[in-house]
Length: 432
Image (cartoon, rainbow, N blue to C red; front, side, top):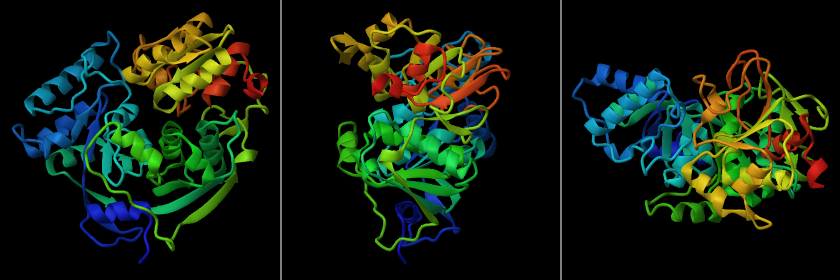
């Protein structure tokens, strides 16, 4: 029976020749990731169920990356880090990326890619819904709850249902003012926040092939906002170039069978895509930037696993170079590697940090920062009556701080353009 990429990966990890959508199977885990928010409860459940002296299934396959509430004086958040440190020491975990040390990374989803954990054909589980980001590398990657993560810690296995695959075909040349964020906001707006519930969202077509790995990561990152189990892009030469520069670990590339069966197909012409915005308070509340032109915003935010990669900041700098922002604007690199590259990457002789500082932008430390709200001293956190336009992935009430604030989601181009005017602005005003 013909299979999709996702079905082939799951079949291989179940030790079977084939699986079918809707079937429940036990699969082996290649990587389990957790962080400072979900790590402590996962550890507590693991010890409760397997015993205080239990050992993890494979120390080489457990990755812990504190990234959410880390640069804060909040005693509860700091206690979470203490719990992670103690567990990593107790279990002799070699892949704990501690805060403040030389190994500190930043946002887990970007850090996983940088550290070579997003390998084609593997299974990655993470205690964070945006673990699906790694599907950009031809990997089955999905978010799980603390109880499932605790079970994996003890056994290395998980019981999963094989998802159907929805195929999204994007052909043609992507216009210079369009980014992956615009594309995924268009798709989520078209199918709704439950339009892909427990299904794979696979991205295919000439436009996808032309995308950088970082842009593919943005696409897969937000499939969870449509209810998807995982997102995936077939691995190609770009994927292998990225992976081989970061790890020598073996991997397997899977491809769809020619006659693979899909739940549905939806096709987009790249040339017809528009800069998109998700209005408060849902990622599927879509409108084009031009439709919202002139809507007041009081804060702009560029960062997170969705919008804090180097290419996101290069895009923002293209618009902000030589300009002055009209509203409070925040730049937060996803990882320490991205942070270093901000200083090494130049446009017209000035590095990105200089461009942002000259424009009046505030730059934060590599982390999730305001994306998930958090303690009152979180960098860039929104406050009462704030109207924020952001490159982050969720705009639910209270997501970035106060429940009274409003959050619009958009691409780095659109956020940067809006930062200059204090109003939602189509980036074509500055790019074309």
